[in-house]
Length: 156
Image 1 (tube, rainbow, N blue to C red):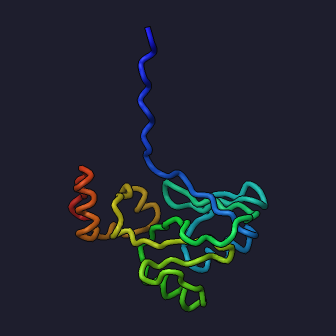
Image 2 (cartoon, rainbow, N blue to C red):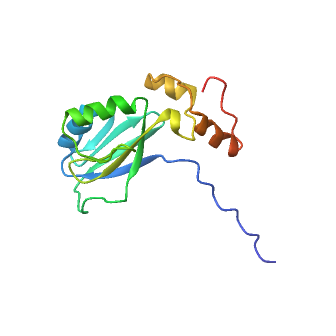
Image 3 (cartoon, rainbow, N blue to C red):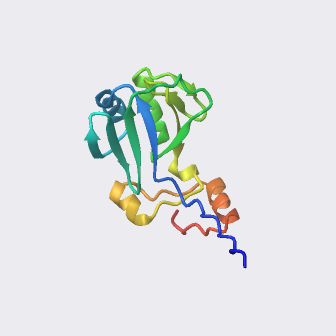
């Protein structure tokens, strides 16, 4: 009798993204100018982990790729416009001002997305741990959640 097919695993989220940078100390200093974060760990001179609640951003020394054009990843923040002001004041070139995309010194393209606009919900405990407001979602984000069968909480 043939074996029954095994159900495919579901994607549940992102544990982390790893960025290649030229130097870990320089990367921590660069990102530390713009983001409030806790260093989760630094197992070696070549690797560091930045805490993002229930996820983390891994920094790995040894960037080998060219500058990212369309390849990018999105970071979610609680104050996009405050970050925009900090980036502009520091002279960081914005790649896409409407979406707030920028390149870090190693050519990694970062898109900044406000928590209120995204279609996922952080657990209340994670938001509290981060000291983040449980700010209201935009109508568009609430509709995206509803379309996926997720009822947004009344206060989100």
